[in-house]
Amino acid sequence: MDLNTLHCNKGQAINIEPTVGIVVVTFNRVTVLTDCIRSLSNINYKNYKIIVVDNASVDGTAEIIKILFPSVRLIRNKDNLGYTGGNNKGIKYALEQNCDYILVLNDDVVVDPEFLKSLINVACIDPSIGIVAPKVVFFENPNKLYKEYGKYNFYLGIGYQQLSRINIPKKIDLIPGASFLIKREVIEKIGLMDESFFLYFDEGDLCFRAKKAGYKIMYDPTAKVYHKVSQSFSGWANPVVLYYSTRNELLLALKHLNFPLFTLLWIPRFALRILRYLIVARDLKLAKFIIRGFLDFNEAKFGRASFEV
Image 1 (tube, rainbow, N blue to C red):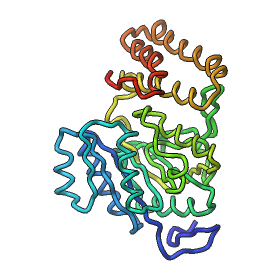
Image 2: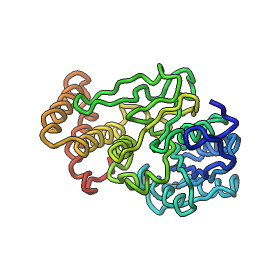
Image 3: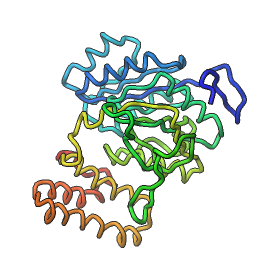
Image 4: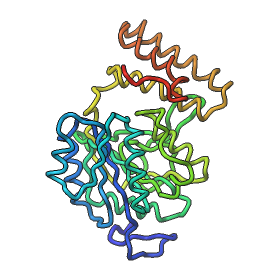
């Protein structure tokens, strides 16, 4: 793939770069955010706008960004709207600015200079391509992928198709939520992120809705971003992670499976997860957060479950 020329309409070269709105949601992480913005300033792509959505940070994020990056569009929320609510604010603004594509980017990543041009090239191969994801690797270990699987079996609740074995752009089911490019047309057709997820598994829901609407999800291994994992939450032993991963995986399955199959396949699966923490790990405190997520997922479907854990 020639990264020096952009192509659309199945290989026809174009001279005008599509406008990309880069949406970065942040909450009390000014250090990683500044690293992210600095890396974006060095990309080999000119037609983009950086939109930072501050979810009511109290660490001086907004003030520092205004001083260091005056060209960045800063949106300040009065409350923490979560990853989904924050992104929706930024996406709406990007649409108002007539952006052709929106790039959703975690604040704790730094990007390769060629990544955006590569993503746009892949997005333009076929008009049915709606979402393109880059190769997301660990910042501390660039040889290791952040998320390995690109396909997902809803019945078994497991991923497959190893992304590490893919070396050319390929169609997948799921994207790593740390970074993805989505076409304006897709959002206008399927809507914004589902804010009932708040954080975690929201990108999966977006992908499944896009697929149902007839769009392809692509993985581009030539576009690379480096993810500083667990800057907010220290892994899967964290109560917030356990609560939302439980609640939202169930919510995702409930949204996209019929109810009898969901009841038959997913309820026992999460009951076993609770037992594993109670019996094997012998950690009652962590098991309580899984139980809360298990009990709250149906309320979350209607936007009523609290995110306070």
